[in-house]
Image: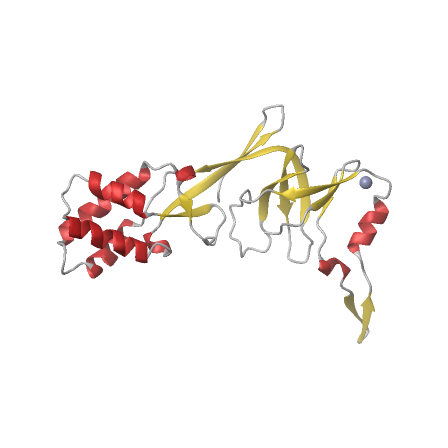
Length: 238
Ligand SMILES: [Zn+2]
């Protein structure tokens, strides 16, 4: 997501995000002849809102959310911006791939509510069974995965380290199961692991910690808390 500020005409309550593409000429085919049409959306906006009160609104990092995939070109998404004094929610909509993005300003905050973290138990059981076939019984591995799933579900997703990549969907977050968390889960586990098994499992997760198959995931619901009046708009992932 861009870090460029949006330009807000406070008087008309109109938002625009300018990019170098706004100054690129358009090519129109008229009766078999290509014609170059110069355009400059930024200059047009500045002209339309001359002598109006304009402000720059900077996107707040980590606030971007949508229930639709990143690759979906016509998605509706939300993110927070600030002018340094107030926070706002921006709703970004593109109805068709032929349309430009449209921005709407909503005074208020975005509340992101991640679900309980979860792991993909069957996939993890298969992988660990393959890796540790010679070191641990499959029953022991299955119990470990069940204990891990249970322990992970009690973790606070807000305190977990987010994966260094984005998933395909902004409302699906991945978290790294780091050594501290795994060590705690392994040692508090009711089953008895030998020190060697603890080391093997920790080393395995360390090696694979950037693989989504060995991470915890959470689905994020989000809500817009409209400024001041306490009005709330619930937005659920599709
Ligand atoms: Zn204006």
